[in-house]
Length: 307
Image (tube, rainbow, N blue to C red):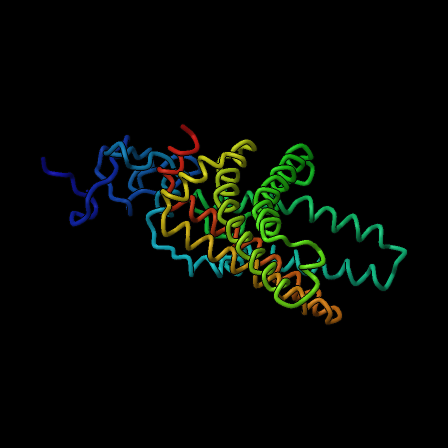
């Protein structure tokens, strides 16, 4: 059976047919509305010729994102791309200024504390927004979540805390199995080195659990998916090399940030700003990488987590 070609561009395959003028249309001959797709020739709705072709504007945006080359290297400059980069600088500048004001004017410390608390409360919601928007095909930072939705913000805090415990448990277990107590950890020598190795090994395992837990919870907005280790194992196996790559990148981001935090904050003002920048970069980029993993394996992830 001969496939239809575009009315305007005979060398291109037709993907849609206009409901109004009846002409066959390629992807270049349709335009996106808020929800629907329209014919550029007459302005009527464009309907897909095949069942696997996107039928709405959001579906088309997601299809384009998931079928457009976007490497993990591209994801590493995510926070500096587009208008969303203003959010990163706002995060750093506001928290740096509130810290500076608190040190210079202790009397307004309460106000600075409330501002920092607001950012702390909003951050988990932002991370989940990044994961969800990335999984849906967006490659720029989303807006801050609404602070007034107290119930949603509390739920996101609880989910993030649960995922943090999930990631931290392997570290605790590794240290216990290695016989590491406070004396061994801070005592120096071979005992401290062994404890450091155990902690790193535990952190790697914790990151391996944290990536799919955050990905599933952020993408599908379900608290209970955080603890579904059986589903996370299936997701990791299904994603294969991509899961290993994302886990390694996320672990590297947080490990680099942890090491930097040992030295940079001691530098007055500038040190605090750089410290906040590195922390925000690690958090936002990690969330984007996790969302990208979910995007690359959309169909298989939906089968694992939604069926």
